[in-house]
Image (cartoon, rainbow, N blue to C red):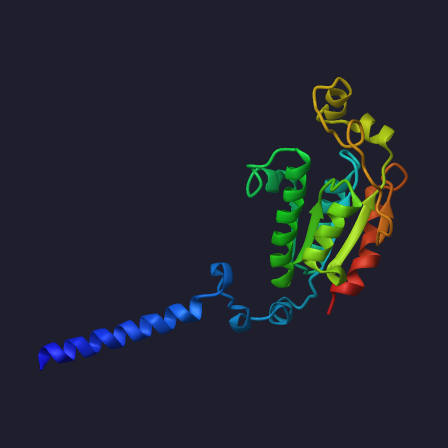
Length: 223
């Protein structure tokens, strides 16, 4: 009798395990749980804000990161939660295994877009500052994140001004051929066709640039 009971328990256990495994067995071993997770709206309700993607594009030295940092501070003062993504925190972490080949540049932006989408879905205003040198690569990012959430900001500071700033000496090295595929020198940059906003930091002060951004962004994020 005890043996029979053990066999019954074993069979019951096997049936439960089989049922569990069948529930998990989906294509590519991906097990969706989205229908059981809190929605983006729940996070936005908690934070009392609407999330949005603010994507800065432009040449190296154009002022993207400087504006992004100043914008984050202004939004923070207004009680809005933000997250900045730029080359320093991305290339030193999640993308530290990528180089600067064309394929790696695409993968770099793809990963950034996927990470950004997670922040957006958590109700967080996300600010990205990346050269992202062509329309195709930015369109890919917008499609991953969602076109309705994607604000493309073109920092259109001219090449000559960017070279003057050249704090890291990158343009000088690129001119000497020491850096290959450098955007603006040995690799092209495509200006956005329809940016949400264009900022030329050779003409606008930091304060003026941030004020223009706030005029665009605040109506979209405040509740």
